[in-house]
Amino acid sequence: MKFDILTLFPAMFEGPLTESIIRRAVEKGLLDIRLHQIRDFAADRHKVVDDAPYGGGDGMVMKVEPIAACLEAVKAERPKARVLLTSPRGRLFDNAAARELAQEEEVIIICGRYEGIDERVRELFVEDEFSIGDFVLTGGELAAMVMIDATVRFVPGVLGSPGSAETDTFSDGLLEYPHYTRPAEFRGHSVPAVLLSGNHAEVARWRRRKALEETIRSRPDLLEKAVLNSDDRRYLLELVERDSK
Image 1: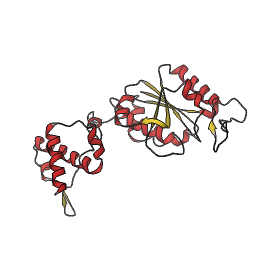
Image 2 (image 1 turned 30 degrees about the horizontal axis):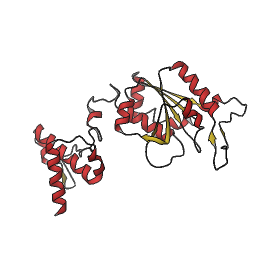
Image 3 (image 1 turned 135 degrees about the horizontal axis):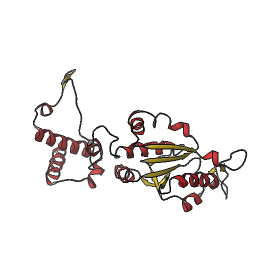
Image 4 (image 1 turned 90 degrees about the vertical axis):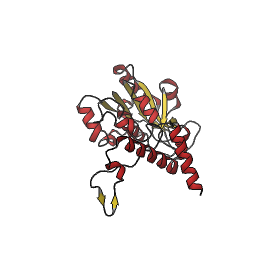
């Protein structure tokens, strides 16, 4: 999968895109991530990339010409690339969006800055916009990192275990169940006996119920869209009745 990131601050991506799982995926040839400095495409000798907004107001607006020139240069090499913008206006980037994005061969992400970008960038080039939450960041770089990190987990071969992405939190609309590893006892706290039993059916049942418990306690809103069977619904009713007593 190929990512091209258009940004005014490419150095911000050092670390998040050069370590751990992403680094190994790049080394294996599973990912190709390129950074493009928008300022390099400014036509004037001072490399100006922003200007005051028409109509007045605070802050500065990213100019359309440098973004357009940068984007067109990238598109010349990645003609099939889907063009995205990080923006508070965008739809919420969630697990489903990450899975959707992982189906693309080529993706271009434009990182917004300052008060925003000239609206003509949206009108002429942007195919979709994403927000990672209802809060304001200093720029779209952090959002782009989050989007890439979440997306590449669904690219075949990136994770060591093929099933990891499918069993993670949000994979079926629920929070994930608790995890334990050795030692079996630590400072008076023991691993639940069922996990040591070797009974795979009981382990699966325990994990599912714990996932339901975690979700109804911490994120009950997720249950509206979660994939639930009759046993799940029955257990949730038991939890509600138990809490009401």
